[in-house]
Picture 1 (cartoon, rainbow, N blue to C red):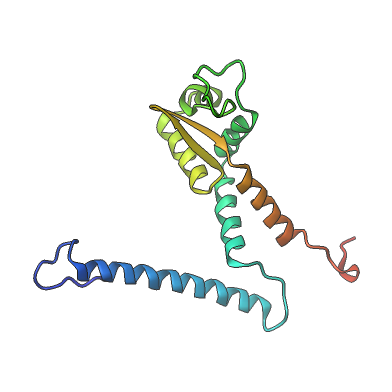
Picture 2 (cartoon, rainbow, N blue to C red):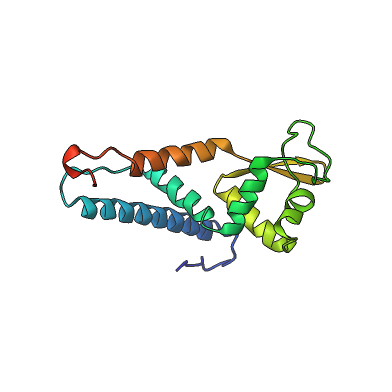
Length: 169
């Protein structure tokens, strides 16, 4: 709980701002400590395979974004790029980018604009799509770098070669 300085008590008070920042730092340290403790408990003192924190966070964030069928459909549409059904003016620098409301929404059975915005935000927060503007129009395209990093992390984390003695039959 944050304490307010006796004089002002408002959110612009420097004491309050410092307390809020300190609280966020402590919260992040506790989250990191929790993950490290979980890894230690899984290893039980033995040498075991662990991925670094950044890779684990990438896996969790992207996997969460990919867990929704609508988001997967949006990614499919964005990967395919422009076709004859697209009605938006093409972006001059990115001819394969799509306008979500003119090009993507009709291919999703005209879902509500707010629902499309929500799913695009989730994909954007996970780094799976990039947003580019041309005037008032917004265009989206797949961030191939994030997809490649995710696939590499999955490969390194879950497709590691097993020793001959424990190869499944």
